[in-house]
Length: 249
Length: 284
Image 1 (cartoon, one colour):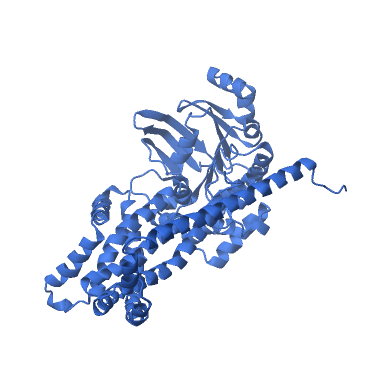
Image 2 (cartoon, one colour):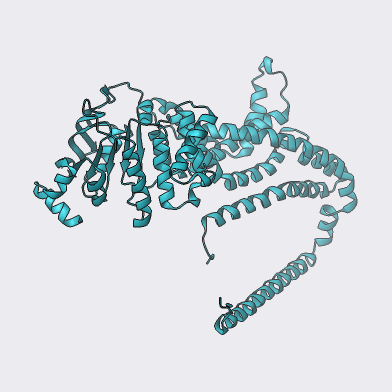
């Protein structure tokens, strides 16, 4: 397992706020993520987990707050957000693979168009990743011919193949049955071992306890409690956290 | 391993299904025949049937009119090819313009919307007159004399691109926003995500309705005759005047039907294939 590098944060987010019209979804959330670290965001539906991830990837415009990636402020006006997004992978609950492309072409697309790699190089990288998740022999299949677990692993690999500085996983196992989510969780463990920095919103608390270094409990758009995973689950301090854990576990 | 045999219950069900199917096929054949015979008898017993027969369905006139009508059809085909290509290009640009979301580009979006409203609402024949007689009426020296078939092609493009743009727009909007979101989150720009992710899926979805508009265009190319272009319809008109018999119109009509059949069948086949792909199990 790779060590976490505590010298300077990979991602720093301060006072993140997001309103949708009158509704305040995030009411000032701070986040620090260090290279190699896995941070789990937990909380009930509607607590702001997904919105937080979307804000970090800049697919959602901030209502307030600032974000730094490796010390570079990515929330500053005029930044090239396409470039930032290529450095921050985001994977969705519903996979969102491109339906008209084979899974190989799904993984290759951004390698070619965003990272300007040659077709040969992109194919090599993509096949390498598909091989790692055991789907190399299905490379030319279309997404709708694959199981949910296979699609989700492809979606994760599509983001990871770009070698992002940070990977955001938005409830990537919520649409899968236990057996298929097992495959996906296995891949996440594998990524953790190779040093990928990950922020994941999840309902899989036992998995969060197992792989996450830091756990954040979001409640109604604010951080109610956070802490080291083992400690967080063993001794929750906040009443809301206790209530949530009692309800879910 | 045990040999699987069909159960009594299943055999009884199958026998019943076969007999049901046979009965409904028979009913269909009989009712079609009865309808055809009745329609035919009603037609031939009308007081003027023999006169209509000689003035619309005269074999000799048909044979004599054939070459000129066929010659005219060649012009229709050329107009069809050029009009189809320009309709696709203009329509795609219009559709993309209407789906723009950048506020700075609002004027373009509104212009495209206005264009579509205008030409979808205007009868084709009026657009044809306006373009066919209006543009030459401007007497722009540089253009010289513009052939009526070119003016006709322009008018057809103006009208049809408005229709086809709506088809494209529906296709673009039918692609779930999550596809664009996934593309953007991988670092693709707005235009890259539209070009590489949204459009390829949208175009595939709208092929059957596009083909339908193409069939409509196939016969509307006959309307360029009102501008004086000697196409199949105009050729037939000349022969009608010559023989004082309407049969050449029927000849031209049949040509257009024959032209349309392959496209119509292809459209049906494509639509059926897409339906099959989205449908699991039995159709009820």
